[in-house]
Length: 178
Image 1: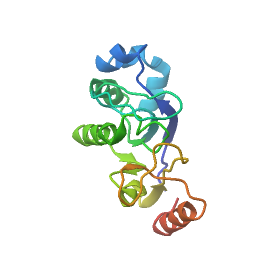
Image 2: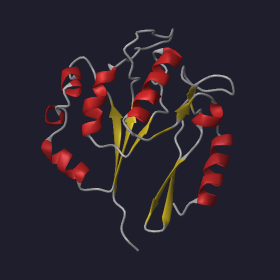
Image 3: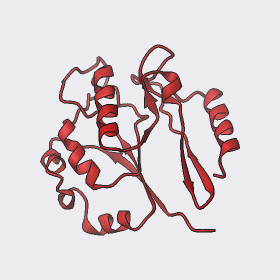
Image 4: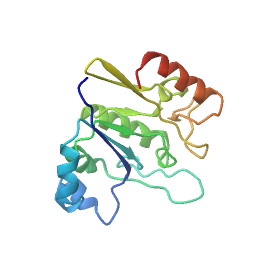
């Protein structure tokens, strides 16, 4: 069997302190070259995109900070060469549905796959499946219940539910090797 190598990274966030580097695609000022080399040495790179990408400021009412990053930050994100971005998190709806849709549209435009959020619950809980060397690897993403959760009628992140999420994972496992 052919080996499959992957790196799963934590939160990816363009902030005020590094926004220009993201906008300019200056990845060497965002991440150390040794990390870039390591990222480029693997088959698959997964990051959690912990911020909506939008140019329209419409913060929701919530406790804690409302994150936002310019759509131009996609230049730096693209340079990281993500295979998949998880968008099931507590900040993806910080700028409301328009922030989520702006993010999804931008990721689609730049051919960056994502998992864990969508226009409704059915889209949000859809898993991502990687096929490599005849093997299937399933990725399921969900978020805790805060301000971001999708419903049958509302866009948002896939909610963690101790019963339904485990059923989703079980069903995914039936379709995948890992």
